[in-house]
Image (tube, rainbow, N blue to C red; front, side, top):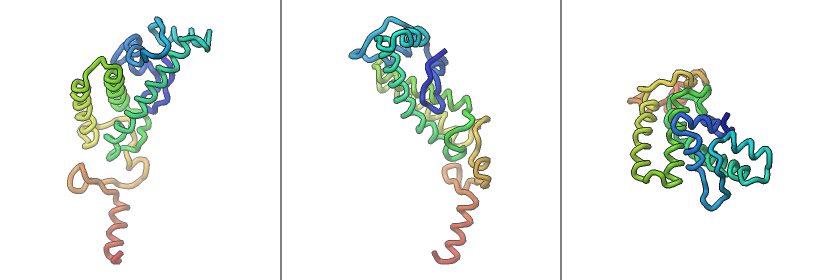
Length: 183
């Protein structure tokens, strides 16, 4: 059982097990200047932290969760931006594609932070994730479990001039009324 996180889409350290193992995740969040541990799983760290809240393991666990929460907090707005033209933000319920994209992006950021991949490699990997995000944004990838803007607002949303320009019927009608009245 992984440790809980503060994210909307990445809610547990277990979410990272799709892209890495616990030991690698712990190593990616390690601060060489901070306390150290030989434990290699979150269950072991949590058990040690519970047994002795003042232990190095408790400090390591708190540090790991803090690092992951900060990275997740910086990644989730990026993921939301991909779907903002079509879906209600935050995504609810969370679509598996959204969770996977967020986890993969956060894992790249954690690896880059620790220096286990180069900045160029990280950017190449992010570019491939951006391509997935762009497909969500333009509708080529449909999120099955996320609510659309129309479902949340009850407003018909239609595309005008392609997928990059979006207007709601209510806004469009309001603009037309303003135009006719000379406002």
